[in-house]
Length: 270
Ligand code: BV8
Ligand code: ZN
Image: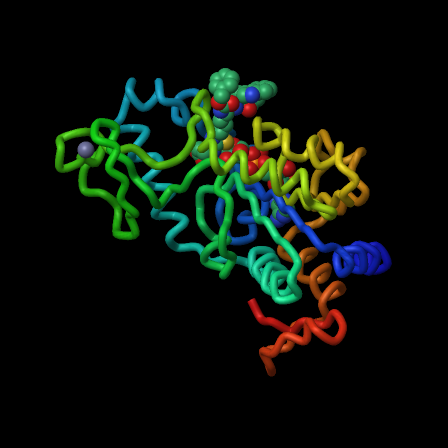
């Protein structure tokens, strides 16, 4: 494993344009259940068609809004883990050296933001933003659980979570920005995703069609594992900090100066 991480890290050090796609797996070590995990996974306990579609919401807005608000309140108790922090540090190191970096996520938990990542491309929206289905007013909800479900807007309309449901189009600008970043990248990472939901998973196929180096980090095999340059069977919270340390030197809490100009060490803390 060490030699593999050295090789993966060395290539990352030489990369000039990195694009990364993350899924629920990167938040697993923060205590947020993934979707497909056999036992704890959301889809093991709930049928997505009953909860994550516009039809389900209009059929039973009380049940659907309560389910999303429970997820919002659960995420509120969670902290970013070393996987999120490593990607935030990687962004700082690369941007500090004039390189380009794009972080694309399917996650709606905003733990990347909490870790210090900026300009995160959210393909599937966010649990923190709630939108009125009548007037479209969007409000960021960081408070306690709603006292009634579905929550209502001042205009009287029902409010829904600002996530993308199955059968709904992704935000066009986010998807276009993601496709542009993947097309231009020379190093692509697929982190903690089962690559089963489209068009997000299509970004991995797109990266494999470019000349970019493709790294996958996932404890389990995915439909793209065989085609990746490296597919590391491990937990992102353990693997990513080591890869970024290999690429930019071990981050030391002692000092915060970036040395991008003379060599590749970058001791930016996330
Ligand atoms: C759309 C927000 C236009 C809500 C979500 C092409 C082919 C087939 C089907 C389609 C297609 N194009 C469109 C479709 C239909 C559909 C789709 O993809 N269906 C699938 C199920 C086949 N797509 C859509 O409906 C999209 N809209 O296409 O609009 C259109 C409309 C109609 C018809 C045609 C076109 C909208 C999709 C977005 C839905 N919203 N989330 C919410 O959160 O509730 S999707 C949601 O599920 C997530 O955001 C994510 O995308 C997906 C779950 O996947 P992952 O994140 O990968 O999580 P998962 O649990 O599956 O896997 C976790 C992985 O982590 C595992 O591999 C595990 O091993 C690993 N792991 C675990 N621990 C760790 C780890 N990895 C690293 N470290 C660890 N510690
Ligand atoms: Zn309204």
